[in-house]
Image (cartoon, rainbow, N blue to C red; front, side, top):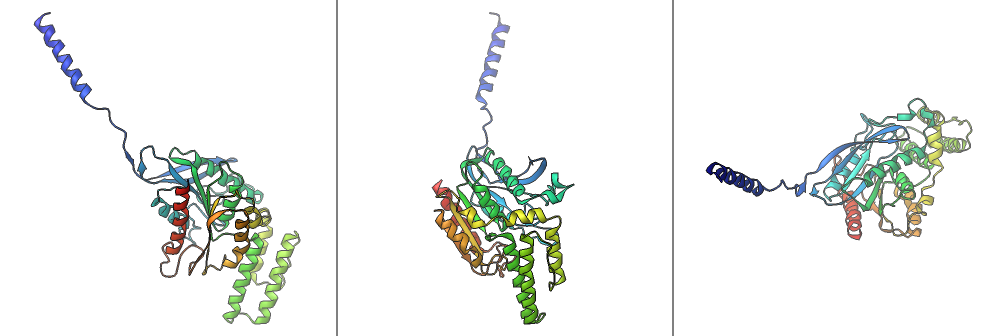
Length: 351
């Protein structure tokens, strides 16, 4: 072998040695927290949401929770901008991040980027079951995320979203291992409406804006209007103040199909069909006129008869409908967070 060929062979051998000494780039051992904008299609409607994945070890599977908003055009953050912006669901997602729980929240029909979607031209056709189907599609999306532990899915619903969570738990597979029903719609929809209207009229009377006789007449008219709605008769608005007249007119117009289909559901009946052993948290706030604790009695009893496990009902002292207290109106109340963490930590350990 010539000196030149020997030198070339030595050079190639040295180069190979150097290349072999450089290790392949290792996959990161720790993945930073991130928000992902997600889009999924439900019955022709592109639905927009936020998937939040907490920081975690690479390859680790995490428990996950679907967050469902309250009634009306409430978006993924729990807001109806620009008037109502409590950020209830966004704050819940932040709190659950601290417990290493993936969350998915989305703009339901009529809110945020989703809007009315396929119902834009005919909003009168939308009914409550459409919202349940939309939530079921979101649940499936969350289930299929690579970081999701399929054995540790829960659904957390606020207000009307709690009713949707109950409906969902009986329909999706695998069933959620836990449900958090936060300030839930625990009665038929029109019973909730009547209760809230009676409360407003009582407060107006206490403030001297109405006489006791006027209060009695209006209360009677409200109850009569509810009966008319359920019988699908034109509502008799005699003795009703103008704002309440407008409300019942809206119930008979574009919103009629939704109102009738939601009002047809009695939440305790749905709760009785839950799988035995499902872990359930139900909260009610003593400063919540929309969902007084007494309205959750029948639902609480139904959960007991279904043999669900704890923590069950937790009464939150001084907490309002959006899980806040007067001392810290921009934060989720400490008692609400404690109840939620007791629910999620035990559920994780059980899983």
